[in-house]
Image 1 (tube, rainbow, N blue to C red):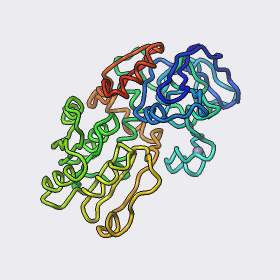
Image 2 (cartoon, rainbow, N blue to C red):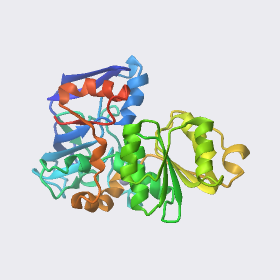
Image 3 (cartoon, protein in one colour):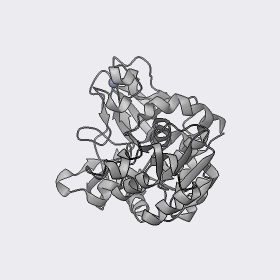
Length: 345
Ligand SMILES: [Zn+2]
């Protein structure tokens, strides 16, 4: 079968690899019907050392179960399923609290020994805990929106939930990538009436406005901070949803959060050290939260609105490629030519 491998920064290839097989009794095999390229795939695409490659790529997918191991109880061949970007047993202490990304037996796709979603098929470990059955056919027009439950919609929603967004909070979203735009949609779903989107790509912020952003701030750094403060009467916002992961986005976040507010990060931090002292978080009693979103926890919450068509998170996809087009899809996203690339194997 075909799969996507990243050899090093800037070098992504579609290659033939062995078909997946059931290796453990808790595995399922899934024929992938829809997948995509993630903004977080662009971090290794920009920096991966040759010694770390080749790595299987892709952590968002929908597909049809083709085989299950002897201990898989809740799935059978023919089931249409969505996978979250991390696999998990669904039964450990952390999974029972909904924190599936901290599962003691879990892990992430495309890490060593695991397979990737930008492929024709995949072996899914801990299938009962990981996969959710979908009540629509694989060729449903809803597929792009359903696919966002793997990662970007659930991740934006996680940022908003952990940030404590309610109808009483003003919100700023830092970043106009797919996660940022769906953080806007999530804040809207949780009732926020004032949502400031910080982003400078007009086609993206335009979609952000349709998802619920009331204000757009294109300026960055100190200028952007001043603009958000001006919009909020000098006070700042109650909740910042940080969906970038670069250090300047963090600096921007503590610049715009109001005293007593919360910074909720879901952009994968590309830094280990950042200010937490008097001049940043401490003086204003600011809470810093966030982390890898347990998107498995939000599938049931968000699915009804997707099925009903009252939200269309799949609008973040603006290009579709086959597996052979995946390398160019990475390039297009890295060049900011495409917002998010759908992959149909
Ligand atoms: Zn677990």
